[in-house]
View 1 (spheres, rainbow, N blue to C red):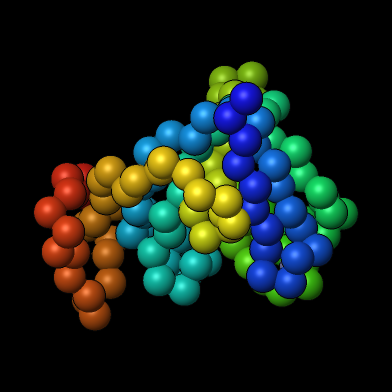
View 2 (cartoon, helix red, strand yellow):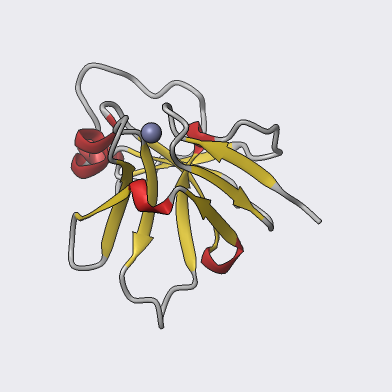
Amino acid sequence: MEQHKGSCLCGKVSIIVNGALSDADACHCYQCRKWSGHFLVSTETERNEVVIEGEEHVKWFESSERARRGFCENCGSALFFDPLDKNKHSWTGICMGLFDTQNEVKLSHHIFVSEKGEYYNITDGLPQNQT
Ligand SMILES: [Zn+2]
C-alpha cells in the first residue's frame, strides 16, 4: 500500500498517509502568504487516510467560514488546510514541507496569482490561475 510519512519541525506532530497524494498547487492568496510566510504549496488526500500522531499538539485556526488551518502549537509549523464542511468534502490539504519520505508529487500549477507578493516572480512556466 502507498504510504507517506511526515512531521513538523519539532517532531511533536507526525503523520502517516495511507493513500495517494494529489499533485501539489502553490497558493499565493493573502491568507496563505500570511500563514506560511511566503506562499503555500500543498497536496490533497482523503482525510480518512491520514493518521496523525501527537494530534493533541495540533492547533486549528478557522481562517474562513469554509476552512481551518492546522499548525503545531510548539514549533508553529504549518500542517493542514482542512475544509469545514465534512459532508461535502472528504479531502484534506497537507503542506508539502512536512514530508520526510520520498513521493511522486510535483507542483502542477499556481492559484490566486492575483494576490501574489510584489517581491517575487513566478518563472517555472507552470499554469497560473488568477483565483
Ligand atoms: Zn512541532
